[in-house]
Structure formats: C-alpha cells, structure tokens
Amino acid sequence: MLVTTVFTSPLLLPLSLSWLIASTFAAPLSDASTSILLDRSSSNSEATTPVSANDRSKILRPAQFAQIAYCQSADVQSSSKLKSDGFTPIAVGGDGGDVPRFFVGHDSQSQSIVVAHQGTDPKTCKFTHLSIVPPNSYEKDLILTPSPHLSLSIANDVKFLLKEMNSTLFPQAGSGPKVHDGFAEAHGRSADAVLSAVKSGLQSTGLKSVLVTGHSLGAAIATMDALMLRQNLDPSTAIKTVVFGLPRGGNQAYANLIDSTFGSGEFTYVTHGHDPVPNVPPRLLDYQHSSGEVHIPSSGEANAVACPGQENTNCQDGNSFFSTSVSDHAGPYFGGILMSNHNCPLSPS
Image 1 (tube, helix red, strand yellow):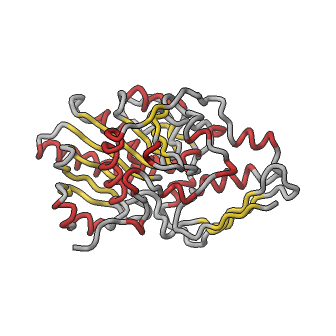
Image 2 (cartoon, helix red, strand yellow):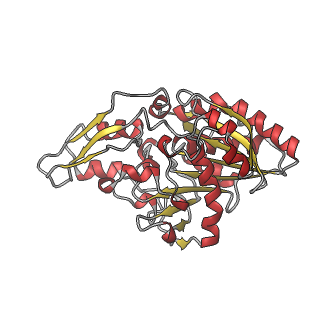
Image 3 (cartoon, rainbow, N blue to C red):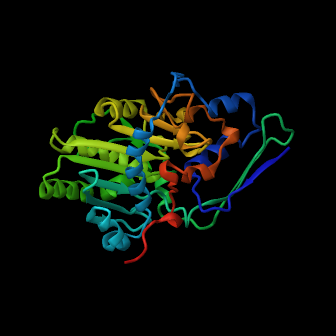
C-alpha cells in the first residue's frame, strides 16, 4: 500500500534529506538499505529524565528569540514590542536568502547579549509531496516532488560534504572537527558581523553573558557561532546556547568539540515529535550529534525529557524513518511557539 503525505504548510524538508532519500531509494527498498539509512551504531540508550517546569521556563526566552529571527530585519530594528519587553537591538543583518537573517541585541530580562539566526526560508522553499512505501509493500519506491520555488538559502542545505573548520574564526579547533559545507558557508557570511556586534555589546553594557539561539539552519549557524564566540571572547564571558530543530552539523570530532567546549546546561538542542530534520544528514555520511538534547514528544511539552549522551535512541534518534512528520519541525516548542516566517510575532511599528 502506498502511503502518501502531502505538505500543504510552508515547512522545510531540507534538500539534503531529499538527496539522501532519492539516493537511498533509487533501488528497491530492502531491510539492508533501511538499516543503512537508520544506522545507530554510535547511538546510546541511557535513560531519560523529565525536564522540570522551571527548566522548561528557562528555554522559553531563547525560543521566543529564535521565532523572532524569522521576522523582517526592519521590524526587529524598530519594534516597540521588543523594546517594551526589555530588548534593545545592536545589529541586524542578512537578506533572508543567501545570508539568513540574524540579529544581536541586549536583553535586560536575561542580562545577556543575544544572538539569533533565521532558519531556511520556509515561505519560498518547501516540498509539496512525499510518498513513502513501507518495506513490506509490493510497490517499493519513493517519490519526492519539490516545489519549484527554491530560495538561495536552500543552497546552504544541499552542500552537505564535510570540510575543516575555518582556522581564523575557530583558532582552537584543529584539523579533526569537520563541518557541513553549506552550514559553514552560511555561517561565514555573517560571522564577522556577529562577532563584532557581540564584542561591542559586551563592552557597552558591561555584561558577561551571551545567549545564542536559532531554528533549523539557524540552529546550525548558531551552534557554530557559540563555538566561535567561545574561542574568541574572554574566558570569563558565559555563553549559553539553546537551539531548536537542529540538523547534524559535523562529524564525530565536531560533536566531541561541542561537548568538551560547553559544560552541563551550556548547550541545549531541542527536538520535537517526529521531526525528520535532526536526523539529517545521516550518520552514514559521518555526521554525529553532540550531547545536550531535550526532546518534546508528541504528547506535549509537559512530558519533555533530557536525553543524556550523544544520539540517544530514547529521543529523536529513536524515531522511525517511516513515521516522520515534517510539520513537527516548526513545533510547537516550549510555550506553544511555532517557527516559520508565518509565525513572526512582530508587527511593523
């Protein structure tokens, strides 16, 4: 029986996933090919722990900023709503395409300099149909029909080869950690502006804390930002990273670099339901997630759990390829927050 899911909402299934599916299922689907696609040789099955209401509330503010990163830069710059909420923009940038939008600002609530990055533009890049045939079907094929409206930002996702980290931006990374080519290019286009704005904000406010966030592609860029800031700022500056819908961004050494750089609670990536994006690019291409996952199951945020170790099969890594839900990529995350251009909470002031 052919199972067909039609995506009518403007949500992203990254092109890297389409490449993976197309290449994997060009031949008839078999147990062996499914095993390769869902390789869990480097997974762990440590028991999860509930996320307390207090800890969930600490993730809400980063989620709000990650959602705001989908807004137009002019709206972020001029929003009276943001100012009344205690946030003052320092720098905004990006074009929503080749350079995803971002902003840096002073948040009086968290007493930190905030960096937030937009994800891949879901309004101009989407998949309209995904047809998956279960392994026991006689019709063993898969059909992907991409939308013809491809923004420049999707090019950041399709360049999935691994490359060494930029030694200027990451002077302490060494040659072992390798990152997703497209994510690294996207990060490089805004890295200097972000670093300069953060340094300026820390100096002008006297603060000693930075909060970094983003969703989807923006989560991948934000993760690289956090490493860049840690390697280029005074060690006394605290850096906290909370990202959402994070795809795998690099190899095992990159995942280990994240783990060794940030202590407990300093790096968190939030996954939701059966979102397929955190499971791409696949580990068969040498990609690996770091530790720090918090998973919101389909039953809702009240049942969110902390997932110890890398690639925990009790959380996102345990999801079946045949029960993914692209709509889960947008959320809802904590506080019912949805991430997409259509969910920008700001109105022009």
